[in-house]
Length: 312
Ligand code: MEV
Image (cartoon, rainbow, N blue to C red; front, side, top):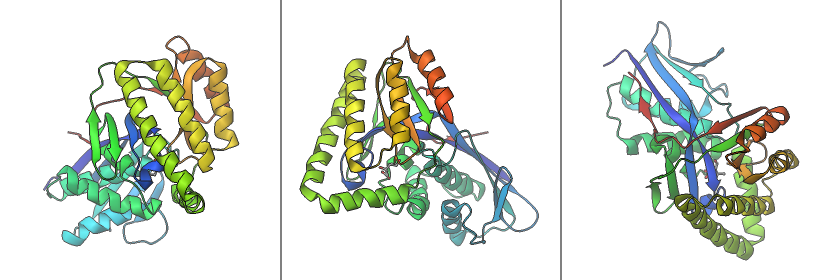
C-alpha cells in the first residue's frame, strides 16, 4: 500500500444541452485547462479532509465537504483505514458552474482507492463519484463526472453514456465566472417544475436541444465557427426560457458581444456560475480584458485530452 497518493481531474464546460440532459437529451461537454488535485497521506490522529484552511473530520456531519464524505465513507466501508488526510486543492472556484464538485469527487475516489491499494477501474470511480454528486445535485445526469474522468470533448446522453469526439483542430473558448455561486440542486428542481407545468413544450424543446447539440458537434468537427457561435446563442435563448439565466450572466454575455465574438452562453446549471464565449481569434485578447474588468475571474481554455490523471 502506498503511503501517499496524488491524482488530478479537470473541470468542465458544457457547450450545449445542460438541464435538458437530465431529462434524456444529448449534451456536449468539454474538459478545461483547470484541474482539482487531491493528495491522500498518512497522518497522526483521526482521518480528515482539508482544503486551504478549511478542515473537517471524515466522521463529522458539519456540512463541510458533504459530497467528498459520501465518497470516502463508501470506500472506507469496504476497507477501513484510520489516520489519513485528504488534501484538496482546486485551480478554479467551487460553485462556478465548472464542475468542481464532480472533479473533486472523481479525484477523491481515485486517490482513496489508490491509497488503499484497491483497483481503480474507471467505472467504479464513476459510480463512487456519482454517489457524491447525488448528495449535492440530487439528480445529476453524469455528464460532469464523465468529463472529469475522460477529458477531451464528449457527446453525452444518459442512455448511451459518453462518446469521445476526436478533435482535429484546437478550439479555444473564454470562460468567465460571475462571482455568484449557484445551487445546482435548486436549479435542477426549478427545471423539473417547468417540465411539469409545460410537458409538451418542454419535450419539444428538449428534442430541439438534442438537434442543436448535434449541430454544434458538426460545426466543431467542420471548423465552422460562425455557425457554432450562432448555435451557442440559440442555446442561451433556450436556457433563458427554462429560467436558469439571469441579469448578471446576460450582462456578461453582452459585454462579450460588444467586443465582437461568434457566440456566448451560460454554462452548467446557470443561476450564477459562468458563461462561455467563442471569440474570434483576433478578438480573444480584448474580450478577455473587457470581461476581466466586469467579472470575478476570466480565462482562456483549450479542450485538454487529459481526464483523470495519476501523478507520480
Ligand atoms: C450541471 O453542470 C449540468 C446540469 O445539466 C446537471 C446535470 O446534468 O447533472 C445542470
